[in-house]
Length: 351
Image (cartoon, rainbow, N blue to C red; front, top):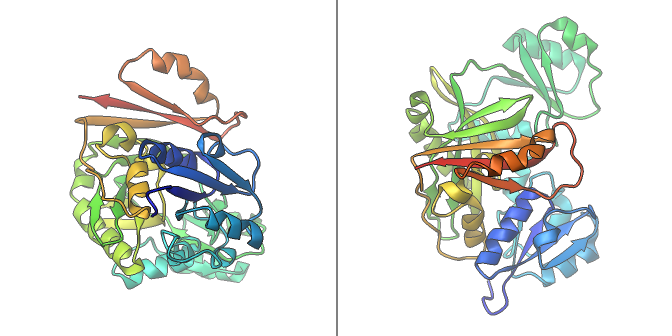
């Protein structure tokens, strides 16, 4: 990166881009947001904003020319137009996007590296779904291969009756068997261009209606016992992809060891606690990595940490949350409150 006039381009205009831009500003790095939506909470805190479609080749070219380095804040960006961006500026590289965007491709990639995903079967027709149910059993979850997040694009199937009632979308799907687990946890790492990898402590996660509700440290003993194996897989993923930046893998802690759930080639909701709870947050370390700067210390700043998402009307309790000095409140500046929408988060530290 040209340190005389550093500008980090961020593809995507949501709250992750907002927090990346805020972390970059502390390092004296300007941010330029590129997003198709005019309403962008990331653009509110950035130095520049290009509002243009993902397939606008001229818009992307002007954006790239204005940036010293480029990254992205979510993984559902179309890959094909991004191939026109200068590869030496873009991190993580497009291969990480290609793997993470397709659940079937992602699971096979993990298996090739020796990881263990939940039992699965590809589904392109109702006959495929019936075969999957016969092979894996019920209950299970039918998921779209692409674009699903926070519980979207998913159907819980208890029986053949449930399956027959679903009108399958005209897109690829994957059926997953339910995993019996004691806890959910995530492994979040940052990898520099030189191959150095640093991990944050793993938080235990609780989801509600498919959306992350809380992340807590320290996690339960069953999680602590499985973190080493999960980290080994995460490091193998990062090294295989030649990854630069923050990478997240989510796991189920089971009686037979960690079972891979999904990966995110970006900063992650389950790492929001690192803003106050780690010496260097996931956002700052991602900026450092993609801008070619030395990585920061990932150690904890407190013995106990609890992060809670503020979803929908939960954000209306801001005044009450601020009355407790142990709370650190982050609101994302979204004007419209609606059910299932992440409006902010609050992190509580116990010294």
